[in-house]
Length: 304
Image (tube, rainbow, N blue to C red):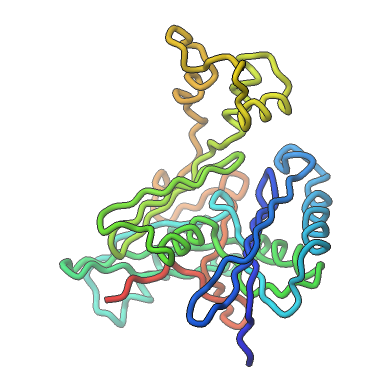
């Protein structure tokens, strides 16, 4: 089977569709094109128009760019995915898959037959400890995400959690230091926190994003959301100085000390207890259990 010459990575976020085109250049990859198509309305506030906004963004993208002959990799938000990192007890190597499956049953807040899931082992050369990262997403979400693209005749080969995609990109580009590196990917409504250290990676999504800054400006300066968004992106010279001493009630001040409502967390569960579906996070996958349908998209391993 011929290796595709190029690939598009596409992320449909709350605010916009973002895409990047990578082309093979010998043994290397070259970035050839990028695209950002903003939605007319934030997806989380669009109600029944959500699907039509996504379809419109993809249709606009398909009109502007050729995808035939290449492959498409789709990003799924960290907030819609599941990732947990657990230190395994000392066991024989051959028993690790069995122990990991047991942990997956305990940790993933849905039955395993309703999710696509996989795991990655992390080992330090100077330690006998073995840590496992368990990654999952609901099959329903995977199928819906793929359908958006296949309806546009796009060849989807990868569905990947966005935080892991960020980690893999930083690794490939040699942006990870020898020590500990923290990466913050700030979206419209959620932020992905990624911490890489040696052969280990830890990630978590938190419900604070760029819209929180915009809403803080709306409340502080009595602006419309659109005006506040414009102010946030392009601060003019005559705009109010948010950093001026004494403005303790400023928009940024209130935002930085804002504490979001506490969400149910897996660490709060008793062993064997599942979160009920209405309270459970929507979850996504690093690798499909059906290897013939979904490709690998686990964290890249450092060479020994």
